[in-house]
Length: 352
Image 1 (cartoon, helix red, strand yellow):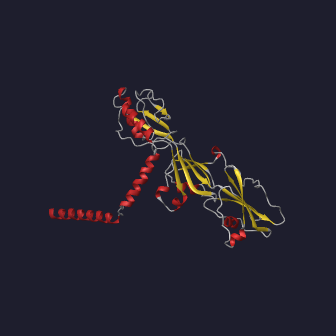
Image 2: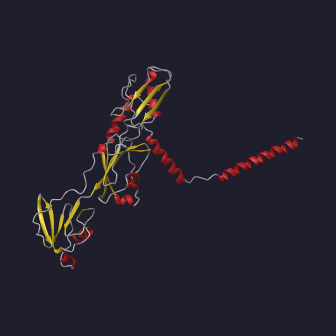
């Protein structure tokens, strides 16, 4: 009887070991790359969970209503109006748990081992990111998750043909958590350490301009695809115009994204019309506050007898037409498009 029980017990152990080995074989092993990618996502998600300017914060002292607090942080990054704390409590870019520990320490003189619960109630008033310039749909964005430049451009409909090939990002001071460094001291510190931290973060932060080449972004260079943060102002720089008028099929304004020659500019305007005088082309160019008139000949350029001039921004190219008098002064041109909307009138989109 005893040997039979021992046999059944051994059989159960054997089945359990086999089952565990089968489950382990079926469970996929995460590669180091996958683990790193997961950790990166968690870091980015944690950054959006930190306290930002405009957040509505609730501080609940469990078991007491009198000492509860609800409000926002002031421009310097402190909880605004906490009456019962001896020293100001710094909150900008800190987590709910960090603030809870700091408040518990501040209230330690009033309560014995107080229990503090801190929650971000509303994130909707965080600074907006703004994207405008040579994009199809300039917009304002309320960012509630991690988003990068390439995705934001796609959301805005992509670039227009007027893009100069550059993107300029203005990043204001203290409106996001990348301009405020992590606090080196422990979470539960005294008021003196908090003051030192604030001074260091303000001095090490500051507004900045970031210039990005669209070619680098399209090439997939990591450093060109920045994470966009609340308060960022992204300008897709509009190329300065060159005007082609007169005896061309489609008189138009073209963008001076790169060096463009006279013959190429005329070709981009549809080429010459039947009554065009290819030998009489005038370029009106502004230099030092004066208008410079340059006469050239497309026929000679085509035959290699004359230089194919490189045009500059704001040049006006006029191809003469038979039966019409030659223009002595630059033509008066109207803007081809209405002016841009005011930033405050741009549509608002929530990224969540």
